[in-house]
Amino acid sequence: MRPMGSRDVDQAVAGMVRVLTPHETADWCRPAGTLDWSCWQTAAHIAHDLLAYAGQLAARPDSAYLPFDLVVRDDAPPRDVLQIAASAGRMLSTILAASDPSTRAWHWGPTDPSGFAALGVNEILMHTHDITEGLGIRWRPPESLCSVVLARLFPHAPAGDPIQVLLWSTGRADLPRPSSAHLLGLEDCARIRPTAGNRHAHAGRRYPHPANHAPHPELQSRGVSAIPGQLRSLVADESAQLIPVN
Image 1 (cartoon, rainbow, N blue to C red):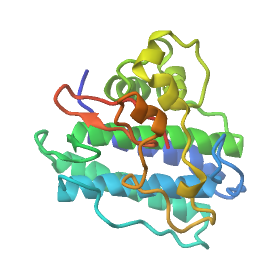
Image 2: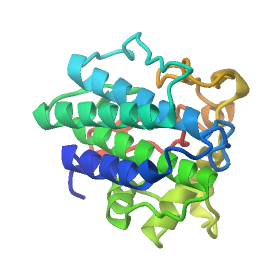
Image 3: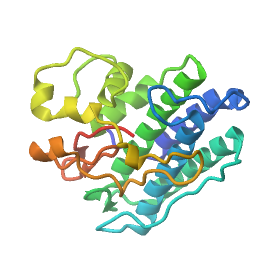
Image 4: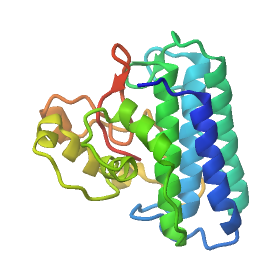
């Protein structure tokens, strides 16, 4: 498995901008795929999490996420929200390029730059998928990026088309479920959605922060220290715990 880095984030950001820019005048108040968020909210959420990842790598905290949030103005048009998401992605890319592989920052444990790159790419790919679904755009995430995200974040995912497997791993598609998935906790992790209390009811203000998700009781009962919506890196072997998307 090759380490992920700034070029992967750049590729994901470029793909997001390329597919969504021609549709900036569409109705972004539509739901984003199967999410409860609108397309507008989902784009703002992408920016929020990418900025949070960049902040972690820049400051290198060892015990928590930095206590700051991105606030997008309610009257920002889709074009501006997309630019904010792209700029947050480029911030993450810039910090990744400047980070030594030995750098560690907190994401539910010490996480290396490659882990943050994988988290960022997964965030961009899956939520771009959600937005394109909401806007009625035919689009598939790049297979090459899906492959490396699966290798880093979902190493126990079943074999198959990397795009479909990543969509399945994040609760967005169906695949035949191997019995081993139950032992790994993958099925439960991939199906969890954020609770209503973690979603902002009004478009544009604050969004669930990576530090604000509580462990799911079912996962706790299985001894899986996973946080809904995020991925906890196991930097010792450069893999990651299995957890749900958001």
